Image (cartoon, rainbow, N blue to C red):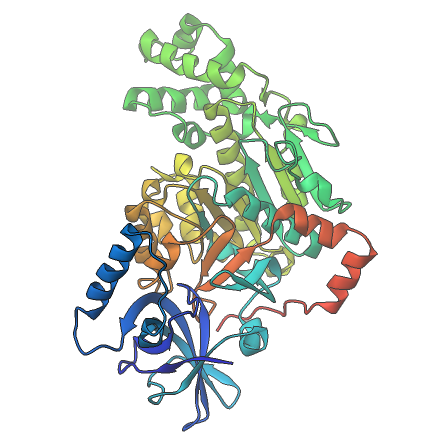
Length: 515
């Protein structure tokens, strides 16, 4: 059904007139049918304006004044004949056009007075070849949600993913959807570092977590606290912690770094344990008095803060690193719950495990047969600005630069993209943009996105909780999405026979291709 007619005269800004009562929304996906050329244009509403058929420019102001006078006198007000003179203008950006079954970027403009109508799921069938198999929600047009599944491909995991939103807009809900979809597929490795304790059981009353998905053999959980369900204790071996890992936690002077290096040389694999357990005087003696006691004392104080709760063990058999790697190589979701840890411990766990995964994949790169068996993997970090803010020289910087080559990607979850190192944020190919109130944050994402989203500022500002834009170089335009509410997703996928019928009746996402 037609809702308007084209009146614009610019390729990159298509305008159309619609009725005064038409509820046109920013972010709506519309179709323009050009009967003259048999071409179907796809556009997105960027703004909505009012207009009026009037001889004088101030007609609307004068009529509004008259209505206000009636309001003050408590007289009945009806627009009556005025409504026939009022209309709305949809200001749209072109998404592309379809001709002969192919989709191309817009290089022309629809004919004057071409019909404009709302898009339906069938209009966007061409999108299926661009969307991936890791489902997160449905295609959205303004407030209207279509029966059209939307996702990204696990093959894009090593190209890095950013999830950015103000608090309360749905970052954690989106993360749980990503994880559950990976659990269903069993094709990709997904390491989730959870400092808030909300992914395992939902974190609060009425919420669900990954344990409720009930997909046997797809989820491995490690936690430093007692959980109500199967899980493993969280331990790191002292022998697998490197100086660079500690540098991600603390700033060291040159003298302190030299002391750490000397201790590593002097004590071998047990250097960290020896430094922590020995007295300051004994360490200085072992180092032949090359370092001041104050230098050694500062180092020991910092080590005590990460040794105090039993996270670090001297027994390499108790370390989780190899187990985590094995699970990722078996295409499982690995959840690391660090919710009762101090920040230094959380960051140490993130650093050591990320480095272990990256170095394992890198070591297999020379063996093509073994490397080809590795599934793409992604490491997801909540509050990512804590580790990616000053990331130069860290393992996270290295993964950002080289990860795609070795099938390892980063997933940064943050409400403040402006605090993430610009060099790293520029490496994120796929962006999930939920509501962002801060203008500087929006500007940073617009400048770093691999797809032009410069015209979508209005739409980003009007996003409601659970609504997102997926900007990726692997899709023809930023995809407006309604993210599944995780609890509903679990019930639909794992629920009763009616839910199973719904699944079988729906259309599955097709394979993803890089174009």
